[in-house]
Amino acid sequence: MRNLILLIGFTFLMFQKSKADFILTAPLKAAYVCNLHLKPPVAYALISKAKAENPTNSLVYYFETQTLFIETFLSEDKNKYESFLKLCSKNLDLIAKDGTESPWKVFVKSDMLLYSGLVRAKFADYISAVNDFRKSYNAINENQRAYPNFALNLKNMGLMDVIIGSVPENYQWAVKLVGFDGDFNRGISRLKQIPDKLKGTNQDIFITETNLTLAFLLLNLKDKDGAWDIIKDVNDPENVFLLIVKASIARHTGRNDLAIELLNSRAKIADVSTLPYLDYLHGVCLLNKLDPQCVYFLSSFLGANKGTNYIKDAYLRIGWSKFLQGDISSYKTYMRFCNQYGTTIVDIDKSAHKESENTENPDVNLLKARLLFDGGYYDKAMLFLSSMDTTKGFTGQIKAEYFYRLGRIYHETDNTEKAVLLYLKTIQLGYTQNEYFAASSCLKLGQLFEKKESFIEAKTYYNRTNTFKNHPYTNSISRDAKAGLNRISKGRTR
Image (cartoon, rainbow, N blue to C red):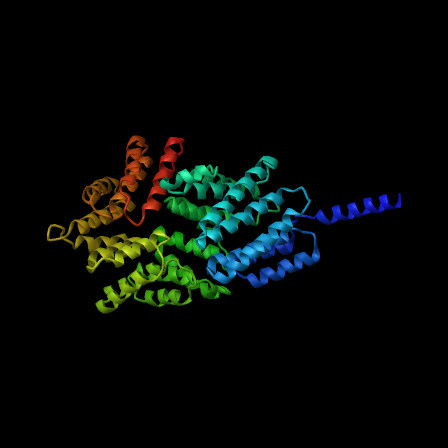
């Protein structure tokens, strides 16, 4: 009998040990805010405090993993990458051993696996990344079935929809092979529901993150007005992620001066030196004003960056600035650097590498018009295009780019009739070229006709984007065209 009592007592104690909590305490909320403010040392201290106050609270493992994820993803530091993988694996095991029945348990498992997948993809371990995404996908769908009213499920379901829905058409067979089902537009719809569901709850700290994510995705979906509407009134001077997203959206919505103003304000933010990307963004915005000060920021990015992305584009842009200042020798040097260094993982670096292979100098008026257009200075861009006479000795490629850039200006200034004619001219000239002008013109025509609810024409031009394959923006244009076709087929328009 005594042994039986001891056995029952031991079993009870073991059960008690395995049963913990998932409590979003004040220190953990504060740690989450510190992560958004890019203050990992303070976040870690708060997480330690939360653990001391409640040693059985398994949410500490989630926020600890999140903090190192943010450091790793932004720094692209190989040492941090190895540390993150070890910490994430250890914390997933600790959470799995927690016997608590809570919607948080499988949600944080899904989120941590999503972090792991994103980091692995960042470091080009794509097979492991897909495996993590698959596990995250299965976990969040399991949690949705068990806890359908847990609003944060929509965050991961929406993000997984967007990730899977963004896979280029030629890789969709692999998506289906591993059992994924994703829809970019459905993902956006799910994310849009979250803020209202979280208002007034203990989870309302996630509203800002959701809005930032949603705004950035809408920007990439080319719904620039929708992106700006979400972000324009969100203010938090110490939120680094807000700064990045707001400045990026301002730059892409004709508010380049505001983007520069926002980036100038970063001197007030602690620990911002750990994020070289801000220098890259600052340099891009200054170049869009044709300001030679861009070279300082782009060079600073290249000196501090430990990652592999945007290196080619930074060298290209320094070269462009030197070219516009008349320093042809330095221009050629930076074109050589652009060709030699960096990677071609992201579209903008693919485009930069292609530019570096061009042995001819760019047309100065086209280059100025391109940069000024990107900054939203449409009248100034038009002046440089107006000074060109395309009947005099220009190649077919320069003519195609001329009509494309002119069409973009008319499109952005709501002269859609002229824009349509110019896009059609671009397509006609660009069929035999390995440039993106014709493909992008098809995409823009699809978006114009979709907005007019001329869905047959919209589908025609969205589908025609796939006839142009050998250009640097194949993946992003294909993704946007696919999203447009999905909206039309499901009766949803932007």
